[in-house]
Image (tube, rainbow, N blue to C red; front, side, top):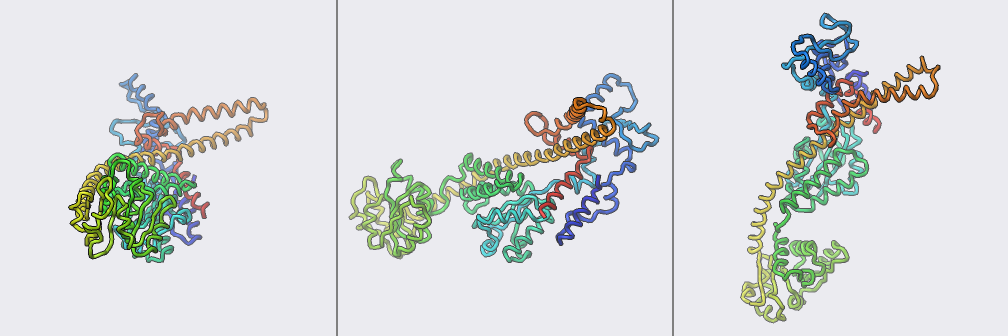
Length: 565
């Protein structure tokens, strides 16, 4: 069995050859001696603590309580187990005799305080390194941005760093965020920051001025808030959830377990927040409010067949077209001075969406055939006056003008006509303001969902900790059994027939399974055992110490990184 110093030194020698930073700080002599656990240096109190933990994991507590119950006046110490430790005046013939009292400090709490825990029991950290529209200028986000097609390559490069186990990239127009599972969050952050600097050409100091760093629970809650649209400029917007789903899809190809699980739970949180609070409902921009208001004025079910006219193909006109398509409108007429701008808009939509260009001199003729007219031009004089609208064919329902231009494109006199209804920017701003207030209230409700889903993820992540312990415990006992069988057969196997040898194999395997039944039962995190997770984790920590599995677990992590190199 290696001491911690030997394990770390081996990895440090490997890293020094690669000219990269070391895994752990230099270990002082006192700590190294503690980590080595030589049996000759064990005190009786240390042995007692370990024996108490053994009793808990193997179910000896019931046996001990039964003994006290049957003989409450007995003052003799309780024998917990034997091991070939050196004896002193408090032990007899190698038999450890430990007296238990109600005032004894929890063995597991004592184990947690050991200096060795800094290197073996401390689990990897979830870290997010982020630069968003809230913290970094557009120029910096543009240089740091990673196209979707390059996400897998970026993830592979990040995972190849010495202190990074898993990674994910969420790169959008408003944010650049890297999610990590790091062996050491300090060294992991440094390595990833250097990687970001090398890739983008931005100095590390400049990145640090505009970044934000979050760890573990804070990192988890942040991603869940992002997925729910709570960190977006427009509260509850739906595009970010689709982008989080894209990350999840990229992580399906063997990029670990924790970070993919984190994004899976984030999608669940985002869906729940929208479905249970309705935070995505209600227009919060003038263009979206214009479309939403127009569709509410139409007879039910007539939106898809109504003739839509958009006058102006500038920024606001383009947004109106996008919102119409998002609401299911597949045919509209666009009047604009130049055809080139309309053609560029047409290329952004699939072939099923029909956008018909008409020149400005045909505007009145097109308006006469339309049910809804959106205006968004920079004209300083009204495009539609009362006399124009009076000349249009009478519609079945009043023709709706939605004017989002300043100055107005629709004269105020048009509203006097019975055949026309006019909505302007002021009308829409009232709708937008009311919807924003409503979304802010719903965002508070969504926080409760975020917290609930975060706790579920934390419980799931905690439960994963027992898996390596279960595997290592099984492998170690199987290895001991196999070695013992080999030694036994080398001495006594010559006179045994095949059937007897198989019987010995079956017997020893059955003995190991029965011995492991108690520890394995206390490590289960499924529904078969109604045991609180903290208790299961305490059992895991105790078994790691009792069977000296921590070094094997640490070596396994180190070996995985060395194999990548």
